[in-house]
Amino acid sequence: MIEVSGLSKTYGRRRDPAVKDVSFDIRDGEIVGLAGLNGAGKTTTISAITGIILPSDGQILVDGMDIISEKARASAGIGWVSEFPSFEQNARPAQLLVYYAGFHGMRRGEARERAEDVLKAVGLEHALDRKIRTYSQGMKKRFGLASAMLSDPQNYLLDEILNGLDPEGMRYVRNLLLEFRKNGKAVLLSTHILGVLQDLADRVLILQNGRVLEALTREQMRKLGKPSFKLRTDRIDGKLIELLSVFGNVSTSGEHVVISGIDATDALAGEISAAVASGGYRLFHLSIESESLEDHFLQLTRDAG
Image 1 (cartoon, rainbow, N blue to C red):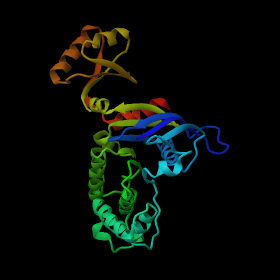
Image 2: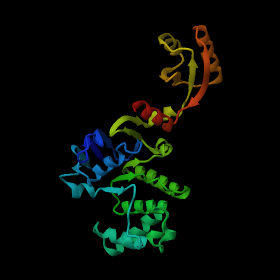
Image 3: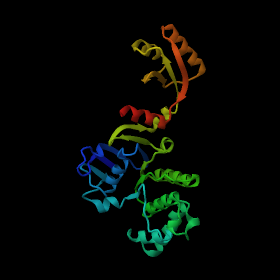
């Protein structure tokens, strides 16, 4: 379990913090997604949890241990894949993993067996004789995940691990994420591929300018996928909102009114059209739409500036 409380980080003489008062937790058996535009603070947040940068303020606990005052013990429970992993380019994968395993106290025989297991888990058993420098970007990401899995840590921090994966690599990583959750691991997954977060994550944190704009639960993400009505009339006022509220949850988005939380059907569209006309409004547009997490994210970050 990872607990982040009031995390803030300002680099050097910068006036604006990279992250500001960020708080969340990742419970065992849970995948938490981290979404945000470039520069939103995702990598800084992950780097602070690993302990490689010191927070300006706040506290981070890994399985109850402070990442600063108990760094060695706390970081031992973390498997981390950075956005741009770097490895000894002339080494072969099993050779390098056996070397890494020594830092976890594994004997050579145990290390070789574990290296073979994790390389097979990420689908690289066919490329054991190749040097790391011949690997594609996606293969290097999968090798990074194999490295993170060596000691079977309780917590995983995965920064843009899906970038560069081909369909086969994506399948291996998705299956491993599901396996991590099934086995009670705590996973923080940062990615720009929001469809994956909508499918896999138990919660998603949306960051903007170093702050948490919104935290969505799985149930809230499911509701995003439900159809809704989007309409445009000659004007929007309190009377129109009240008139339409009998059909569902009413909100506004620019010059449009959105009715959600309903079973959007063509028949109901006819009723809404009639209600708008009876209220003295002109209806210019009415459509049935389904909002994805990506749609929601783009609208939210655009509105927040």
